[in-house]
Length: 109
Image (tube, rainbow, N blue to C red; front, side):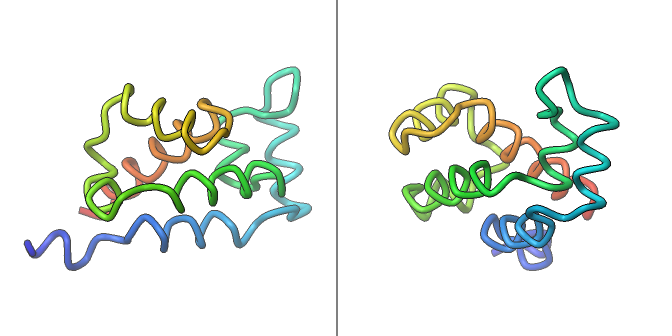
């Protein structure tokens, strides 16, 4: 285990960080401000996911192998797509989550 992996937030920890703001009023305001015509902009989804989006993300993370979780910042687009398809979740929602996690890890390092 490297020094950076010791201090890096785990995928599960990031999921719980995102989950804290499910249905949050401030988060809904952010979604309205930055959302697309459906109110589902990327920034908004990570700031305040809907209950449905959070459940999709939880399902996808639950089926990931320990290796995929440990290397989530290095997953290819094809791997993210396959995991989403296997979990039967929206590929875009899961990709946004994985990209957000990667950005969080880079920000902290």
